[in-house]
Image (tube, rainbow, N blue to C red; front, top):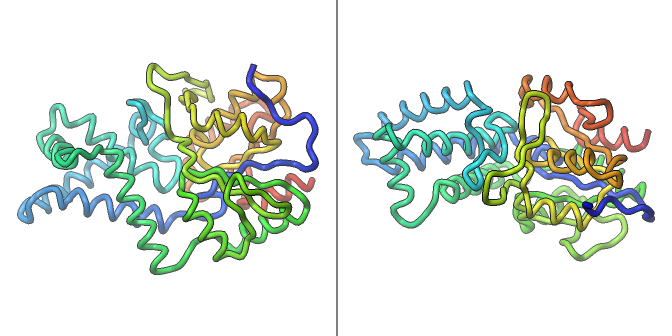
Length: 307
């Protein structure tokens, strides 16, 4: 039996993702993509870079056309589909390169050049992500939206215990919340009316092996996520909010379906302009009360919780 949410608690606990909940990461996603494309071109000589640029454009078109086939990969399986947020397409491009290397000479050359110094495609993509986000922060500053910051302060003032669990590093989270004047402490430090930050949560990491699928409409989402499962067991939230269903909400939904102690946990799925229509259709097929689509970002969640 999975450990479920606390039966009694002094306050409601909301477990929150970061990007897409506190931010609208469109600029960061574009910068991530630009950094990745530039880094791929740098794997070949100057005279071949136009050819690589054109190849990457075709590869991106193929990825966008098949977002369920290509995505952010962990343990050889898809952890998040290629269209779920402004970042996952870039992981899907690397997945495409890996799949094509067996019969596409240029894909093989790119993958081989990346791996020549002992790196991996995933680590290469991670460095491009960090570089892209840092370039946006240097130009614009941290990107927590005023609306999300206001909603966060409202939730804290009402006594909601808010825990931010993110794949982003804790140092980045602390810096961005400080910039937005939202009080926060780094886990395990805790204080009333302050966020608790759990960065580098590795929600994307899948366990080795065949995986475990969760049926969501016509999709199957892999929920063999040992690091995220450990956090969920430790935190035992009353509600979870995120924008990338596969990373943030699929595993809590599995708990909710299987364990009576999780039956009343509320799962809020934030719907943004970048949310794919196909995901809206898939989640619309779920039973009432399994997942609550919310427009209006974190402020919309605060209104639901108040109601």
